Structure formats: C-alpha cells, structure tokens
Length: 130
Image (cartoon, rainbow, N blue to C red):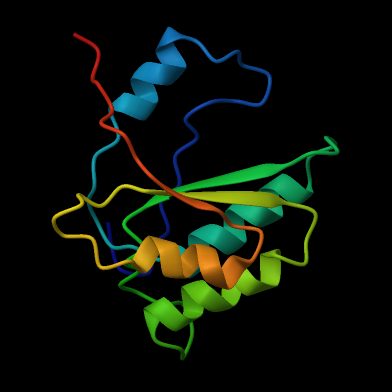
C-alpha cells in the first residue's frame, strides 16, 4: 500500500445483523500501513450521508495518530479539521481509543474534542475468537 492510498474496511454491512462473523471481523482488526485519518473520516462521512437512514453513526477505531495528510496541513491538524467539519453534518460519531494505556498520548481524545459530536472511550480488550 502506498502513502497516497486510503484503505477502508467495511466490518458490517448496513443490512447485516450484529453476528458472530461481524464480531470476528472486528476482533481481527490489526494495525498497519499509513494512517490517512482525515481522508478516512471524510470518505466515511460522505458514504454515510448517501444512506437513506435518518440516524447515522460513524465509529472511528484509532490511536488518534494520523501520520499522512491529503493536503497541506500536518496530519493531526487535518484530522481535527475534518472532525470539526462533520460535526455540522447529520452524522453522529464516536471515537474508540485503540491505543494501549501505557502508550496513550491522548490523541484519540483530542480528535473527539475537535469533533464536538465525537465521544471518546477507551477500548476494552477485544477477545479474538478461538
């Protein structure tokens, strides 16, 4: 994967029930590649805005550390800018902090603070299916 690409994975389809396969996909998430968080937040929001549902929820699983931007802003500032922009859209948001507590720099919380609609919560240990 190159720095210019944005990878997004759908873990559950809108019409799919919350099931063992969906839980397994969430449990199998692994970090990697570059984090173009601003582009991912913007892209996911655009997808949600095209959905017919009245209630839309963007769930961001992150350590908060975007490390590649799509524009001239530094990556963290760009992520905050997009979080602020979607706060005005009809999409509610939650940030789940995936950073281990020993290494947490508060970046996921800062992202949540910039989004105003964002809430931040630490991630409990996700058990992988046996």
